[in-house]
Amino acid sequence: MTAKTKPLFLGIDTGGTYTDAVLWSEAGGPSGKVLAKAKALTTRHDLAVGISGAVGAVLEKSGTDPAAIKLVSMSTTLATNALVEGQGGR
Image (tube, rainbow, N blue to C red):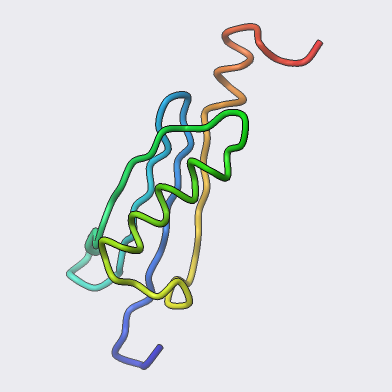
């Protein structure tokens, strides 16, 4: 990354139905700029499948080299949903 290049950030949110990914840059003003976003089905049996699907789509849409990403942030509602629905371990 050069001095003029702004860092890129990848956000991932795994929900009960969909996994969302967004690629964001500090460039483009005080609010930054969304470069690409994508959605994939959440795969509860193997979360990596849904996550890699959403992330792969974001990288493909934006033409971004994964090495250019400075920070990855992950969030999920799965644990909260399991507690609310009474589906946690016993």
